[in-house]
Amino acid sequence: MSDLDTQVIEFTTRVTSAMGLSLSADVEETPDHLRINLTGEGADALVRRKGEALDALQVIVNTVFRRDARG
Image 1: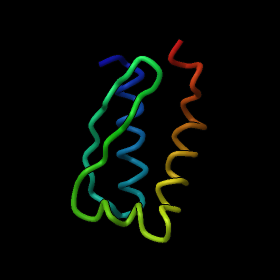
Image 2: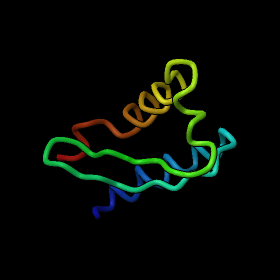
Image 3: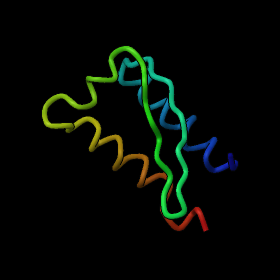
Image 4: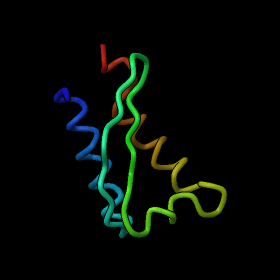
């Protein structure tokens, strides 16, 4: 796991914690993207209301960690 991967996981965990969710984050890396899998009690809150909270979280993480940051 790269330093950038660790930063993304830590940031995502901090954001979800600020949302009142206690989730763990695991990284799944492919050649063209990084996927963060969130698990834990209350994770379903991210997919309520047509996944609006999950969409917002993705925008925040993508904005902070631009795709080109991975080289």
